[in-house]
Length: 363
Image (cartoon, rainbow, N blue to C red):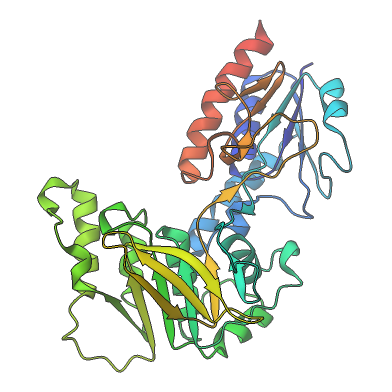
């Protein structure tokens, strides 16, 4: 009877367990999870005002309910159980631990107070066990570095009114904190231009439909852009951004959300707390600074190291060749390819690895 250990109970790990349980007779699968609860980023990485996305956990729970699958929570590999023990105990070991550590900016001042990584910040509003001690101080002027959906999620969560958050999955403490903040400005910084932004149209459109916020983009951000040369999906994103550039539209909204494109962070200054973010225009080289009370960096994540597991220090994920870390040990999901792709991407990748494992174990 083949025995398999899957490290991580997020979508990648659960999808893989589901396929292996269906296709391998008499398989025994242990899923190790360091947290008290399963599902990883399907819970802690999804914005709490997008409950429809979290419904994937219903499917993942059905996998955990299978007789062949055993969930072991509150168990961290490298601390509670060693990598060597796993290899000796199971026929195959698969890491599906994701990428939960925030990447660093690598500039001076990023260790000042009120500078937060997006991973830590999103864990806070998702009431993740790792964020119990975080009590973010935001102030009136909040900066967000990043041009992906995570940056837009954070901006949207901060700009929504209490009424708009009625259907959000928030604890009373987080709900109260979001309702009582004093934010007047949200600045979103991207190193490159609008055509390089990685956010998607639904998230961008949603940002523009908030009851108490007005989105602004400087018209000069679109200089030299020929939308006819872009894919249709990208053209629609640019068109939505251009609609935000119409500064003639009068607004009485309290919160102003300002996109800053071609803005490379150079340094952060302040005494104890952040006071200014210093940026450079990547087109002209011109230096500028923006006064901020807090800053959230949404520039990506990295997989934490586990003692004994080969690691790629350059790519900040496990070292592997086509998912194979070493004989009998594999990786899948973000710890394999980096923090890119959505839940369907994880499903597809899990299916591919499952086929490989089934072929090996049936040989």
